Image 1: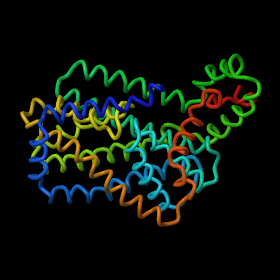
Image 2 (image 1 turned 180 degrees about the vertical axis):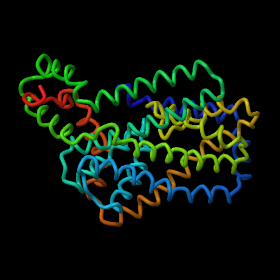
Image 3 (image 1 turned 90 degrees about the horizontal axis):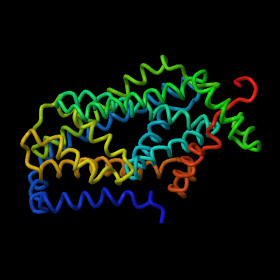
Image 4 (image 1 turned 120 degrees about the horizontal axis):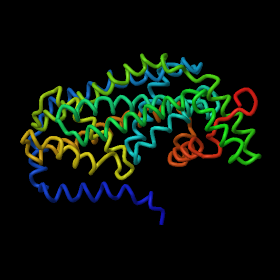
Length: 339
């Protein structure tokens, strides 16, 4: 049995345990007492969130000489977010590679690097906000873990973005490990990716847009929290909630169910909020998001979209993840100009 396939069950088990401990009747009561006006207000934030995400992606594409229209990018962004929510560790997000390749006709390696840069900026942004949150609640151990993780991710990002830094490592792999039959492909892949890799300083504006986007996303969840009578100071909530977002990236749950509830119960414990309200908010918030994206995805499926992306969604998601992460093909080396 493939151990990775059963990992998401852990989140389900945690969720069931929490629901039983909190009491399903109390959860139902919280749901009945929800303030619908605040839920509707939270839905309105989907518009600026989607626009900011798309514009950030558009700027990164321009830096890599990739061209497509803004409307198509908006559609692909929403579809990517939808698929990401439904897969462990949000791997479905990388379905955007297929949409980008379909529209730009660029090599899959270049499209993969584009989506990876976009994703790196998101993860770094969430870590930065979460680090501030951990410092606000004076949790030294959590702060150390988050700061150390942030440094590792940032260094990895810099390493991948700088050919002069990764060249010695890739050179060793190229000559000592990579089979001869794969060297030509590796050489081509290196050219495709690094001939148009943006300089880190040019990503400052996309990074700022990423931070603003996540602040808006957290604000949207904050409105849902208020709808469930989860009263926490706005600034505190904005910086604490990203910690739960990071936990949901672990591939042990689907859409973060189970892990998010456990994390929020721990983080919000000092505020003396009824557990059923926290759990109800935590469960219902992603349901709103998934529901909204489902409706938009259904609408977009009726409009002109890459047909093959809907014929076999799961095959495409994991094909591109496999292609991008395939060890022997991701050592982007140049046998001549770069080595």
